[in-house]
Length: 302
Image 1 (cartoon, rainbow, N blue to C red):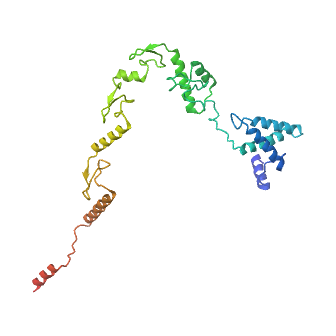
Image 2 (cartoon, one colour):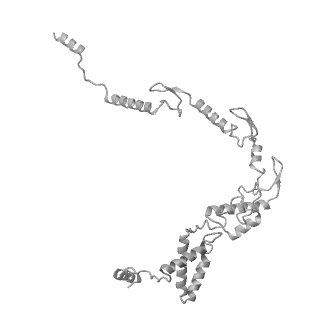
Image 3 (cartoon, helix red, strand yellow):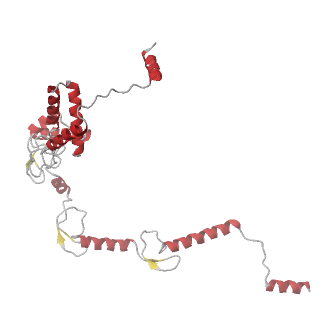
């Protein structure tokens, strides 16, 4: 008989076997006393709630072993007691990504040594020097796939940038180093200046005050002027018109708006529906008898 068939027969005949359970060493008040002592040790933490987990487990296990308990049973009992203490202080274990060294390091600091990156160079750069970049590539201490790929590319660019020879910017004339072979400008600002779209001071489109915009698309000097500019543009794009239903003068919210309210829209829609129904039925042959028709018929019959 095959092994799987024998196992299936035994399960059918005798039922699913239950996992063996070991009797607890500490029970009742003795267990609560030990758990309270563990909570007192775990609560005195500085870096994490799990800081004294290992020491508590090792101490309990050693004490049980000296009392004559087997190592495996002492380890299981120590683990259960410590886990109960951690649950009592509401300790939640972090995920794998949260446990990596770069998780708490801000982007302004080096992803390897956590040191501050030189002011103005931290945008897009994750390492303070090529030494840290080489260390990150050698040890490969990366988190999830996206973060690890970004750090790897940052380290690669920094190493290539330091090995590249210094060149002179064609716009401002300052020396710079770049990881790209064909780079002729030191910054995006110089690139825009070379293209001729370098933005300087301009006059506000509403109040006429001279200001220096952060972007070329900005046309107003303040939020108040920007709101007034949007209102002016809205009125120019959507002029006032008369409602097709009631004739009220209104300003539509869309270029194709023809009714001033929902009520007028429903009335015009019902009117169009009734007209389509009449057109589908066609002209009626029914003659309604009126007083004039009756008199004319009576004169003809006389």
